[in-house]
Image (cartoon, rainbow, N blue to C red; front, side):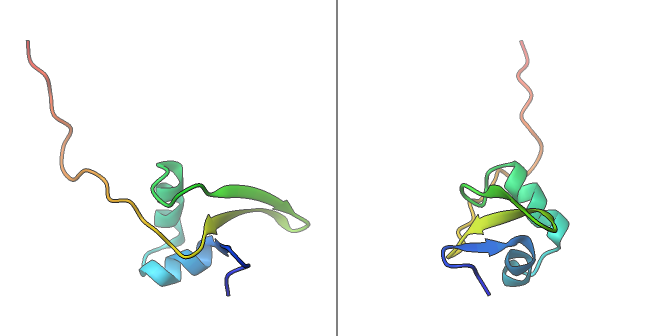
Length: 67
């Protein structure tokens, strides 16, 4: 269950139907919004803005500029 306006990596992975590792990749590329890392007694956790929004990325190989 989301914490007010924030949700955990596990909740996001269940929502999107992907692994926790994929959610971490999306966090690193800023495609899940402004996520924040919070320290709690058990360690650090990522909080993701809720309701979830996900930006799409480019598909395919990067273009090569030739001179």
